[in-house]
Amino acid sequence: MIQFLLNDRLQQETTLPPDTTVLQYLRRDAGRCGTKEGCASGDCGACTVVIAEPQGEALRYTPINACLTFMSALQGKQLITVEDLKHRGELHSVQQAMVDNHASQCGFCTPGFVMSMFALQKSAQKKMQSAALASRGAQREEILQALSGNLCRCTGYRPIVDAAHSACELQAEDQFDRGEKVTLQRLRAIAPIAGQVTRAQDDVSLLPSSIDELAAAYLANPQARLVAGGTDLALEVTQRHQRLTQLIALSHIPELQAISVTPDSLLIGAAATLSSCLPLLEHEFPDFGALLERFASQQIRNQGTFGGNIANASPIGDGGPVLLALGASLVLRRGKEQRTLPLEQFYLGYKQTALQAGEFIEQIIIPRVAADSSRTLKVYKVSKRLDDDISAVCGAFHIEVREGIVIHASIAYGGMAAIAKRASHCEQQLVGQVWQSTTVERACQALAVDYQPISDFRASQEYRMQVAKNLLRRCLIETTSSETLMRVTQYV
Image (cartoon, helix red, strand yellow):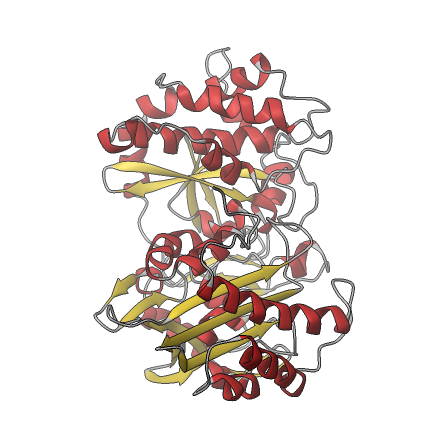
């Protein structure tokens, strides 16, 4: 049984098929058609809803794509849709801001924008309560980031952004603020459910609440599919129209969501979301943080996980090349047995990994850079759009230069082979050599030994190879001529 609040009503679902998405449930079972299906792949944001869950003594409001979220993710949470915002005959302040700024045209995308703005407003109100952030308010970049996962087909972005500014400047209390304590109590009263969640004929959804329960469940059901954020797995349902009859949900296991720091390493639980990892990674490796901000949309980052990105083993997954360049390792678990495997040994071939039957990723270990080290990480993503797009090529360069000599070079690319892969021959041409253009040109030629890219609808093999070389040249320029602006996201 899945228990959650649909706004203020307790819902208990026992027979839903495990691959039922929140969007399907809302439109088909709950009769709530304000949430729209646009792309069914998490690209347009028309299906955006908001999840509220306890965070300390308050609620955290998170926008997600309903089209890519399975119902098991709602256990113990509050689901808020556009129908819930209007209260006692009056529009919510976010909805009123859309009206006042003439921000709705055809109206199809409007509910999704409204829900993203609603979550942004809640976030902005919490920031306003901090004296350190009160003067900053809702900055334009924050608004653009929050709305980056919502597309307007009528190209009406200016009034939508104006509406977001207006909504975030308001600090008027709404029905959600007034009922926050009661909602917290009701959500905490929903007992954690371990084991079976729903069953529909022979289909089953399992929701373990600890790592030991997960290990036992997966060992007993190795044919089941693991679902963390589901932002890629759900495409098998929404795009390929396949059935997923046995799912094991990972979203309610605290150990898999834990993020910690030791003197030597960053330890990231496999089910930690990209959004939750961003502040730490941005602090440790600024370029990694910048990449994550371009990693799909805000809604996807709120659901997607590093464990899923790695286990998916896509050659164009952006996490792979960066983690390879940083020398990351994985803690793998099968039953009661654990093993640690360098990420470089995890990828075996296209969509093939070293995971055994019943084995899963428990944790990602990222070595930290010593405070006195001159080692630097540069990451470049080349795609057709700046935001919310898949890479044609992603390059990560972990370089250390002392007195002009390269003493460490760890370079990896995505989109250049069947797997995310280190450029070992290129690295050999760099280590021990002077960090200058002639050395880099020799290393560029070695890339043809490391990779034989293919042509597809994102880029030709010739383009990919030329871009890969140019990114290494860019790395040289950025590390030796800091005054030279090289990125469209740099401002003076």
